[in-house]
Length: 342
Ligand code: KG4
Ligand code: ZN
Image 1 (cartoon, rainbow, N blue to C red):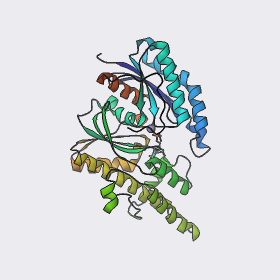
Image 2 (spheres, rainbow, N blue to C red):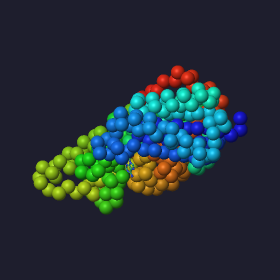
Image 3 (cartoon, helix red, strand yellow):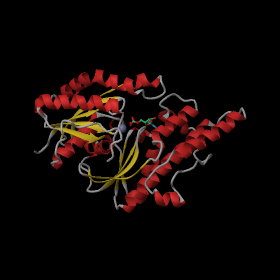
Image 4 (tube, helix red, strand yellow):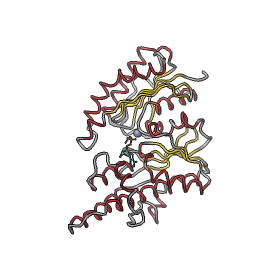
């Protein structure tokens, strides 16, 4: 098969995403989001997300097929996120994908969402090099991957031991009284602050912790340090220097992410770093990665932000790579796996 035509389906969290890819070419990508419904609760409500997927499934599918000018009969395969994610959300996507596969007779591929965040970059920046490091950062995950083959050769070097980077930003946003999700607000505020005014801790970057966890992350100590710092001002009835707090906190997170990603590049002899996931919108992460990677002779590839947040294109891209590699399809009793390992 030369250039397989793949439908990708993503429903692991609050975005219902459908996309059509031919080989490494994106033909259509349509996303519906239930974030507006969750925002007033200050976090994702799983039942609300599942119901929203159920409602958006067919209209979003129809929109993607129409935009690609493709019908189900022309597809070579259907790829769907099988995990990790919210079990109720995953179930809607996987059940729908099975129904489509059964009705159309097309093979089904259950794929890993985290790997999808890296895979999508191939649709934007072209074929991957033989070996690269991928940093996937969002509200749900913070993982460092070594990729020899996006379909069959992905090794997890490390991941967060507690909060994801985006989650830590959302918590600090709440501490500073900013709306949910706080990440983009903290980022914006940080641009007005002095990033050297307050030095917050960098988890797992020194001594025994670093030796034992060279590629793992920990943001809970940092989050607690920020909380203590903010509370001390509040207890004294003084105004919190919110912009400096946001800047110092953003610096700590970006510093750790970039330091560990570039260490992985150096030790695995990779000259390419792919960054994906919704957190790659973070302005300080982008700046530091560009600055330090250049000094290390590493090229940074970050897809445009609409392909970094959850979408169907990432799943179609990974499905396409699996089909091209000759991987066997998934059985039709494919389960969801909310904690799916790589
Ligand atoms: O990938 P994504 O859209 O959804 C998840 O799978 O989590 O990532 C969203 C996360 C949220 O935690 C959000 O606050 C954070 O990424 N985020 C940011 C920025 N933009 C989004 N965090 C810091 N700075 C940003 N500019
Ligand atoms: Zn994601």
